[in-house]
Length: 542
Image (cartoon, rainbow, N blue to C red):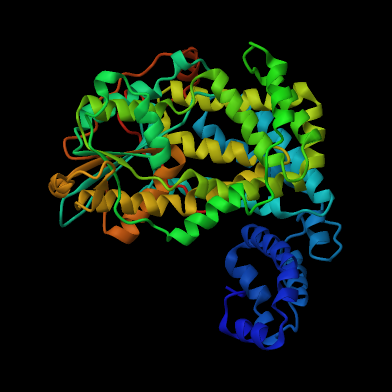
């Protein structure tokens, strides 16, 4: 709000000082984190009254404002982290209280998984990493974890936009009040972490959901190039059975698309070290990429990558691991096959991959370079790093195999933020992944239901004018953002179930099932039997 205020904009334009103000914003960020903690400790009204004098004092700089907020917050609470005071340019003898913060986070996240030992390991390592960051004067992580905790606590009271569990799927149903058109969002993970492709219940669940929901249109999180590759790999008997559609209107102009592509391949300095990647690939031979092997390979890439190759090299390593597992992207493949078997129109509704990667890779590269020293230190302890990754994958895998797909957005964001040294980059990149694609995919599906889409082969698409129900398959983390966009910008309303109800899904029995049920923390009631279980909404920033 401060940066966008008319007074500051005028000041910056006339005196050329906006760059100096931006440099000092970190003072305000640190003070705001302290203010949030103090308000939480003593109550918002009490804290507000103690800071009310700021409006009359009219501090002459952001630095002074931050110092005054910090000073007044200390009068409300003495247990604020010492390093946060150092970030605001102040000294304080207040002890660090991060142990309690992560204990509370662990308690909230344990509502979504019965694997308490694994969760404790992850949060303990995150606490160690954040403590080290704050001791070196980097306090941003504190506010991120505080926001996560506040969001988890608020989920009980916020249920409208939250995805529900339909077996391993995260689903939301929406209906337009005047037209009666329905959009059913089917959220999926793109693979089963740490499991064999044959164990993954998602492809079968997606196919079954599409058949049972009987949509008039199937939309999938693929752009034209990726969609064409997937369609070319369909069995011969399924090729040509679906009318393949593209969005009628591009959500960006040609210049911006060209800019995104050039940013990835030409205009950007980011590149891939082919010799290094080839050496890493050859080191595995015919072996699968197990967790310790992946950790060692990741350490090699962080240690030997140049500053302009780190993000591309890590991406190439991850792609190699997925390729070895043979399980990545089977959710989209199952969607295309199901649409073809039912001879349903198919909409490729995502933005071009080059456009998205052209924006997200610089975010990763910058964040990973900042944390390179800490990341190398963490990865050097192979046993510790492997234990954390195995614990993270086990928690996500348990949720999938136990039929709690609606919990995936919570677990994936919370666990991702806890990754030592790179969790903050994951949070930044997640926003880039979602902020443009969610509105674009929502608009494309709505337009297609209204008959505004173009056939990829140039044929007549007028048969789409009377469509009533669309099934949209996307990654689980897109579900809430797309639902929110459909409600806010297109007039849809969230429904507890589509017309005709949710289909029954056959739950896959796994090694986690018995232990989860015996602990009393597995999905109960409708969610356990394949019916959606309600969860609360993930804030847009997550």
